Length: 356
Image (cartoon, rainbow, N blue to C red; front, side, top):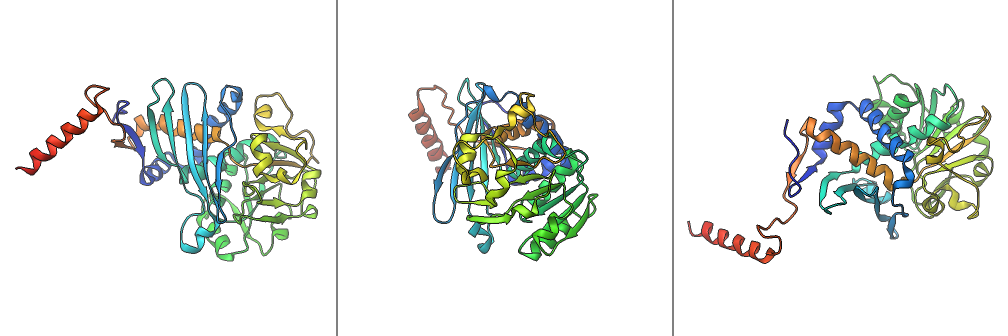
């Protein structure tokens, strides 16, 4: 297998590379291994630089930068969210990311992150459910059967033991596609005619809708005692999925409160509404699930450390798999201060080639 290049050449993981990497490892194994990186980084949460994502909002969507550093590595993700894109055959969410060496400032990895974001979101959801879902939970409702749904299902099977799926989407074709894609993967799947039907008997409810608006996907009467809610879709200002009454009777767990209070379900609540940070539960500093009747809510908006974990995991696979390309991204003059001289040498080479 190829060895990783020096710092002047950046390994680039294209969409094709990423798909081959995931398939060569196996989707379930990839999610399991990725989850260990995410969980490990949550345990060392206090070592990271943390800021809410830097967002540029428009009428049609949002473009965001999500940076963080642990002092040795620096990572960021560029990601958009444009629900209208599906009407023109485009993705709602696209992304790419960079992992860099703090000591030199040189990038170590440049990667697609549209597929990787779906994987890290699902892995993070399942990590949270390990600590928050009821014991022996094996039935999950997924409301919103878009691009995230299959990844969520497989992650919850791999990490939590979910085997029964109840699927609902306002677009029946989305449910049909999701059910078809998950065939043969060990699930008992039922397509439902309503969200009420989907949540009946479910131990875990995942909401993953895409419309950029305050919506009520779940009402209070739909959430019974002991349920764990994995709220994935509410992830920007003005976009929620749960009725406020659900929040009032749930124990709420978040990634980074300063970001979640702006973007998550708790934007509906006063600024001092109590929440527990997920890293504290994973590190053993706070209690997650404490009773069988407790309603737990993971108010997931996605945070930069999760992308950092994903980039770190992917980089660790490169030497063994060779699934990357060498990207000529960084200028490398013979004399570090002679950048213009590098340009002149290129001009001379061009003239030499043209004269042949």
